[in-house]
Image (cartoon, rainbow, N blue to C red):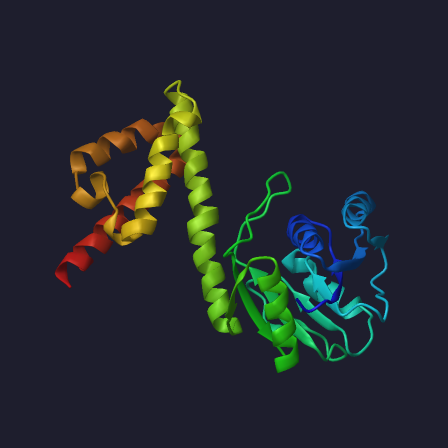
Length: 262
């Protein structure tokens, strides 16, 4: 394993997960820079690093991983100071390499295709890392970093990475909201969310096994208008969920009618 000294700008969920995993993989973590002193010091202490609120990195740092919210990224990169040979990368899925200012010569993107929460430990084995960089040497460094923590490397340009980020919003963020809605409806029936657990697990497992497009069941794919109307009546307590149900149902009907005609 190639040894690199690594520092982080940011101490949120992504920085926390990557930093700890790299530390346990044997990398030296030098600095954690964060405006939130509590989070920054906690993360730094966990990996024997130093904390600072200043975006000034020592010459000994080989790689700086900028893991901050998308709306803060440009401002952080503009203020960041390091030696010219330091590789600086960000972890945003929907922002390109063109966000880096002129003074940062070696740059890249180190995007893990995963959802992170501080209270949950992510399994990094075979986790997709979508990488992009300014030069071959930087590509080799990022590939080594990802593979050293178990990741599966994909070199992807900005356009295709943004499309995968959009796909992730559908399968993760939108799905999570649907689960939230399902929980709310189950509670109205005086049942806990856990009653839906086996269904959720089987739906996900089946989608991965045979493809989601081949897994669809329910009233919409059957175009069962009688059941659909009853469901819409039951959703009268929430015009928003009623609207979502109606639009999703129409989309499913259109998709499978078109698919059957191909």
